[in-house]
Image 1 (cartoon, protein in one colour):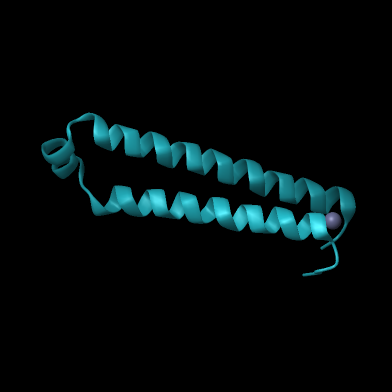
Image 2: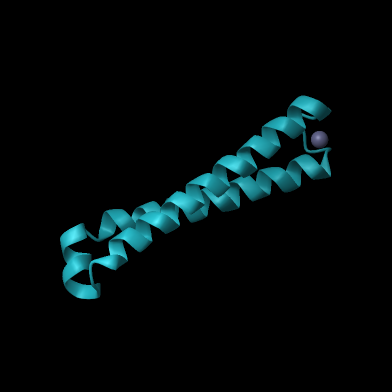
Length: 77
Ligand SMILES: [Zn+2]
């Protein structure tokens, strides 16, 4: 993988950051079951967590697509 292109590096860093956010959101959902969250924090909490995870997944997909598009257009990898 080339390290010459600053834009490519920036986009890769963005993908890594978004993937971490997504991974963290999934980890939270896996840690707390629906029942536990419903009992402790109300029935909306798990749904909120799912929405956060879904948003993080979409953000990750967008940043990954941007990186792929850049590599395809720029040929920097
Ligand atoms: Zn590039």
